[in-house]
Image (tube, rainbow, N blue to C red; front, side, top):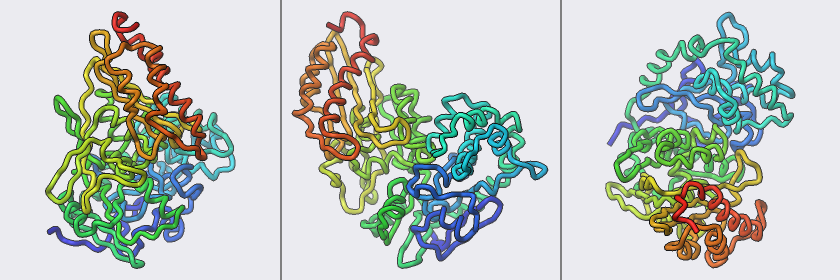
Length: 485
């Protein structure tokens, strides 16, 4: 058993913070504003949508120190153990003047009421550190998680383009101190299990993956916290009282991506940002999809395993992975069991779980080179919104016939679910517009959608049928002429 440490430690700007009596569900935002009086970080929505609370978090990953934009409003303090937090107050420039990002915002009139400005500055700072000369798409993706209620995006984008006119990341203080900060974080790595108790609550940070499996057995009813993108909202919006929390965002063993000739195995702790880089070459049809998931701050912390384990019928990843034929690796102590991902979802709020187990990894078969794949997400707004309907198609057409087909939906039932009747009709037939339309008419045999605040049942069914036709229009030119009617 590993040693026990009863405090969390992290660097805040240039100060080492050690806490042994904070509530496990206290947010970083409250700590910054109320305890440290760093009020540049704002609270706008308290649910990770508006970006006013954006800060930079430096963490060790695969032997390097990387900085990412993160929401402070829904992340609990224990999740920052061993990290470096940079707030708007921590920005520095030689001579004491404005930082290049701030100067660009000022000169290009990127701030109006100013409430959202610190978060926007931090998002652009993270972008500038990665891409000193960003293009329009990179800028827009970096700002997806930042809402400007004064609608000042045009001058903000102009400021983003101009940042490097005021300096270079190589001369930035964060880059200049990279070796120092790297050593600081290395020094905080002691291989201990962290146990923090306060206000009748307990936080546990396992030392490693094996330790996590033991902790999970001992605490089968504990809440597992990775990116806090859902759990954080349970606390900030639903006012839930969580007594025992197991934090796993620091476990590198759960962030492995292993590629073989037949499968890609993705650790459950891999974030959306990390998976995009790891698998884009294998599944190019997903390149546009990652930008439809939340904002950059959420993609930097939200995990693939968490999106699956929550069991939401409108989770972004399950339809995509089900259509690709993914399996789920579940672990209990030293025992693993592998099930089809689609079989994990039993009913609303109910999954195929054993007491004390957890999602360890996802295995995705590498799609055949001749397969046709697509994913479509319908939502009220294009960026940073929850799906109304999400559908993923996987089809292999050989010798003029549809040899393989999987179509998976989110938002059409109480669970993510395949359109089995439509698949049955398509398999063995030719790939034609008429056949796709006819298959779409079988959707009522598979689904009985509901009406809610996002859409009516009629709209969900209508748009889902239309997406069958959309798939044909998108893929008809990719199929040899002799295989279509």
